[in-house]
Length: 344
Ligand SMILES: *[C@@H]1O[C@H](CO)[C@@H](O)[C@H](O)[C@H]1NC(C)=O
Ligand SMILES: *[C@@H]1O[C@H](CO)[C@@H](O)[C@H](O)[C@H]1NC(C)=O
Image 1 (cartoon, rainbow, N blue to C red):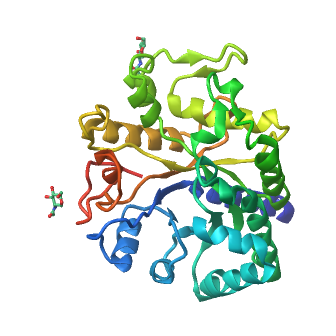
Image 2: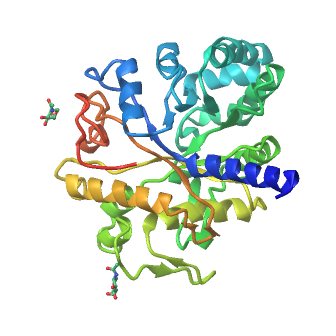
């Protein structure tokens, strides 16, 4: 073996190592009054071999809890701070200096800053500020030479799609398509970032149990469905929802922006109106999801391209409002006992 071919092999092996490791994470929500201390949480996450955590703010104590671990973090700019950052380059630079650059210098492994959460599913007064805020923060990252290491994006709900079935019909809503999605996709492309979707097969299944079978929603053996326009075969609802976003981007001329599933999961308990919110279904969904992701099969529209996904959520969160299911998406009880068995 020549030195050059050795180098090529070594580089490929490294690339594979990172590629193999890149992608299974958990959302660490903190809307509970009985959750463990951040340091204990970092130990718990390490104990199950998870290397990616997403949080919903940029709390210093939380970020620091993961210093000196091998865990990568996605941090979030809360919705109410977006307009201020969009308006002022100085504000963006101050934010990056105080909350990102200092943390990275101290040891934090921050991989993404997400700007708000599901902004386009509500809060229209923030919409025009969203992409400008992404650019401002990007410019600040460039200033601190962090733009190669840290990317910027924003998670969307399925609500941004006006159609998602069959997947090839996936298209963004008319009210956001050209005004926001086009400039956003342009931003993601120019900065080498990722499109982010929160994908919950649980909701369409709960709302339409007549047309959607449990096996299709839970990655079990079933006949699946064919997309009549593309001939692609879908054996599970997760892939179909994922590809709807791939086709919505394609529809605007963006063919190769990566898609990350920033949230997915299944509640283990629910109100009487939420029949599929059961321990058995939650266990089945999350374990089969992990198997599917680890298989590196990709989705039918992007075969072989391993899907990156973050399960929602680490803990049951007793202060979340809404239906009972909202407080029961956790993989763990607050006392750090697993709600059901699962394996990363
Ligand atoms: C899936 O179902 C088909 C048709 O019923 C059957 O032939 C096949 O053995 C099943 N596969 C598994 C893994 O259960
Ligand atoms: C943890 O909490 C759950 C739910 O309240 C309970 O069922 C379980 O027994 C607790 N485990 C321990 C070790 O206390």
